[in-house]
Image (cartoon, rainbow, N blue to C red; front, side, top):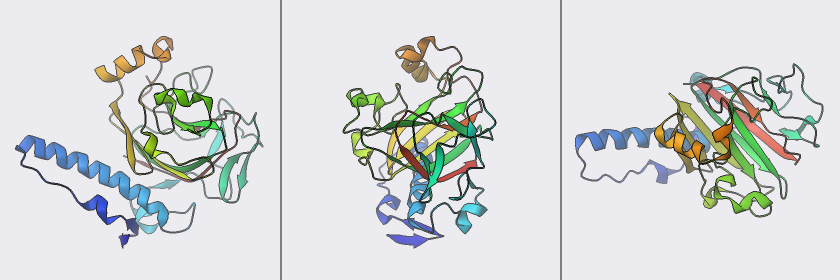
Length: 258
């Protein structure tokens, strides 16, 4: 690991294999590499500095801390103005301590953003990270897509590829190699810009799809969401964390507008 500009950088990820390309392919390759490198730098920054704080570079880059390790002031329950007492702070992490805490969401809404956080799930546990959350639906998941959190080894939902940790739940399957087992911290980056959704888990790209594109529409049509009115139709919304009745922990929750 080398350290540059306040980030811990894995030197391997900075090496790009150049091939003989036409100019348009070259521009596309450079753009994709730049976005991927940005996400990798976001992930590698977890290794530097104290938990639940912003580095100088993050502050200058417009990052916002959604959890400071001391209070839950940025969060409230879905369709409520308060936060359940079952969402607590446990050794510097946001923790769902018991079932019934309810799904929670940020007080602010976001449109184009980059979100990064770390999560840890209990054995045989299930949870999720929602985005584009709207309170128009009955449940938090009624209209909001979800990046899955799961104990891939033990939870019964592990039989469906698009239900594995790091997947866009029910739509885009993650790579199993991107998952760390229950009890270990997993690092996630979710980037949404002009409806282009990208997800990385532990440095591995797990999803890249444009919401509303023909590919997206096909994925939705082949899923249970095909009959869900307004699913993923919002162009901005809250970030949400799921109460799936299993203990789950979150830390280093940071977001910036794009």
